[in-house]
Structures are given as C-alpha cells and as structure tokens.
Amino acid sequence: MQNLTFSPQSGAPLYRQLYEMLLGEIRCAGLAPGERLPSRRALAAHLGLSLNTVDSAYQMLVAEGYVQAAPKSGYYVCPQGIEGLVPPPESPARAEDGPPRPRWQYDFAGGGIDASLFPLRTWERISRDVMRGGEALLNPGETQGEPCLRRAVARYLHEYRGVRARPSQVVIGAGSETLLGMAARLLDGRKVAVESPGYARTAAVLRNAGLQVCPTGVDQHGMRVSGLEPDCCAACVTPSHQFPTGVTMPAPRRAELLQWARAGARTVIEDDYDSEFRFDGRPIPALQGLDGGDRVIYLGTFSRSLAPAIRAAYMVLPERLITRWQTLYGDYASTVSRFEQHTLSRLMEEGHFARHINRIRSVYRGRRDALVRALEQALGGRAQPLCTHTGLHMPVRMSNGMSEAELVEAAAAQGVRVRALGAGRPDQPAVVLSYGGLAADDIEPACALLARAWKK
Image 1 (cartoon, rainbow, N blue to C red):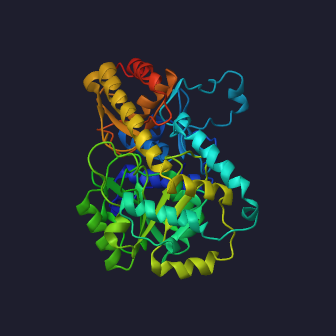
Image 2 (image 1 turned 90 degrees about the horizontal axis):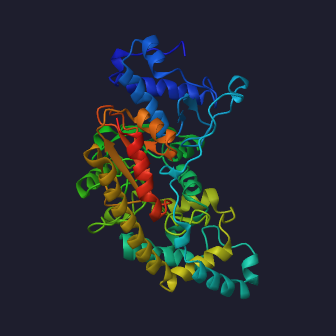
Image 3 (image 1 turned 120 degrees about the vertical axis):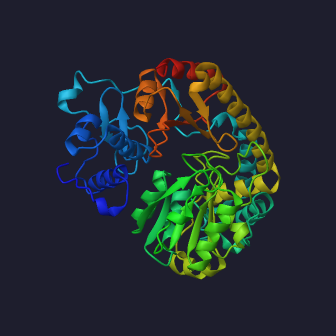
C-alpha cells in the first residue's frame, strides 16, 4: 500500500483514483484474497485524504464484489470472481477469539428467487413426456441449441419484448456468463464500457475474455453516453433494470446510446435483466427492437423467471455476426441438455411459461408493496425506497447520519445481510435490498431488525 500516488492532472475525483489503485492491487495480487485492508481512518490519515473519500472507494469495491465488509472486523479482499460477503480465511491470530462467521437471519443480498413458485408439476409432466420418446435426444444436437427452443424464444421475445429475430439468430447457452464470454470474442476491438456501479460478474467475464473494461458512470437515466470513451468498441448495459441502482433507461437515452453505436460501427450488448418484472406502467421495448437488430447483441436468461439451476439462457445475434459466431463456435457442443431444451420449449409453446410469468409477477408485486410498507412503518422518513417499479431488488436511501459501510455493518450485527449501493455518493448513502428470495412472512420482522440496527 506504499505505492499509492494520485495525479491532479487525471481529472478523475480522488475517490475514483483510489478505487482504481486498490482494484489494481487486488488484480495483481498485491492485495491477496482474504487480506485485510487498512481501516478507513488509518488509510485516510496515511494518504492525507478525507474519510469520505476513502469510504467511497471502499464502498465501490464492496458493491462490485472485490471487497467484503466484516462486522466489527474491517474490510477483506474477496476470492477472485466472487461477489458479496464471503468470509475471509481466518489467520491463526484470529482463529480462536475472532468474531464468528455471520449467520444471516434474513438475507437481502442473496439475489435469489422463491423456489416454491416454480411450476414443478407442469415441468415434471412435460419432462416425462420428453423422456418417453427421447432416445434421439441422447445424441448431440445443434451447436446453437435445439431448433424448437430457438423458435419458441424468438416468438416469445418478439411478442413480449419487441425483439426482431429469426430462430437462426438465437443461441442457447448455459447461463448469461457463458453467452457473454462468447459475445466478447465477436467484437471488433479490445475496450468495452461497463456500468459503474454495475454487476461485477459482467466485468469479470469480459476481462477473462481478454478485453479491457472501461467503467462508465450511471445516472438517473442509466449509463451516461457522454461518459463513453471514444475508442470503446462496445458498451454493456442493463437498460430494463440497472443493477444496483434500479434505474430504467428511458427512450431518449436509449436512442442516444444507439446513435453512439451506429456512428462508430460499435456494438451494444443488452442484458435485459429483470425485464419480466415490470410492476407499474408499460415496459419499454428492448433496445434490440428499437435498433432493428443491427448493432445490438441481446442477452436474456431463465434464471430469474424459472430458476437459477436451469442453466438456460439465450443470445440474439445481429445478422452481421452470425457467420463470425459459426466460424468460432460452430464445432462446439451445446452447453444445455437437449432434454431440458425440449422441456423448456414445450413449456413456452403450450403457454405455461407466459402464465407462470404473469403469476409470479403478481406475487412479487405484492412483496414489493409489502416491503415498501414495512420500511415506512419501521423506519419512517429515514428510509426512501427508490426505483420500485421494476425488478426484484430495491435501492433504499437512508438519512440517519450513517455511511453505507456503517449501515451494512449495523444490519449484519442484527443478523440481516444487505448490500451497499456503492454509487460513490457519500452524501446520499443507500443500500440495496434484494427481496426475490425472501419469504413474504419474513419482510416485516426483517425490517424491524433493520430499524433496530439503523436507529441512530
């Protein structure tokens, strides 16, 4: 930590420079997984910075999954590629008398779903039917995925998201990370813009593909197009429901982003995250449909709408990239079981999937409403829910005088796990409450514990 130096000529704020330097130390193993970072006060005194500057840098690292905050212990480097709170390895000095690993009574940071909502009986019935005549499915299938599922996905996306695609443009893969890694090799350059703050795994996948990631700021309308570096060949965005801020990119910003892509023959990678869970108002069509499909690679997954264990996601490629994809991956085997692909295609073709989405949207809308009410009852004006109209996570701005780190630590002390927003605004501290995996009956008692933790 002795070689941290700041450049007044860089134009970047000090917290941003500190964040980038610490991130560089983590990536080159100067700060090893499990290693404890200096306390905020100690580092601020050592570098001659304000406590808020150091706190903002630390919270950005926490939000992106590079660092964890351990209650009453400090900040620790997370294992590579793992986000959120992961307990650091205990040193011999701490093994006997250190704080025990937290046992979360309520988890607002897990990002899960309610598994009880899965249409299990329908899935079992269709699976049995597929298995009965499934001898042919024991042999390899098409690289891009089963034609029946690609047809069903193309039809569904056109009807519900306004996506323009033929089945020949659809690729089925085992999760959005797998497909994003494939998409990375189709780009015409080496620098890609990602949202900051944003989903840590997106940046990790792109780096693993050998690309240079350029964090680009997010405001109340999503990724700031004015902040995009001119030599970026692509931008990765989550316009339907940005993580973690929760904002939805409005039509004018979408048009501005598409114009940026067209003007420089660039590509937009659209992760249509949480688009199924629009609770208020009409959903804005996908970027891909607004563009006509030439400049946008569209990504979606069944992890939130069905279950994460069903490792099925889809990618819609522009026509101009199909030949390149086939050249690179045409000899690969499909990464998703043919049996599951056929089961999933029938679930969609017979209307079960659309009905399931309508049902769980109603359930999650009720839980969103219950969480807003519980926060109001428990915390009153100290808690301001933000961007509540879409998705299964809710940013909550706090005005009780505590920093984001203090909010996370105090909640953890009460057995409640929350995530810092990490938007680099120490004057507007906020946490992110992911409620998709929280039972309805747990919402009020969880908020009561948060009120106790944040009574300052």
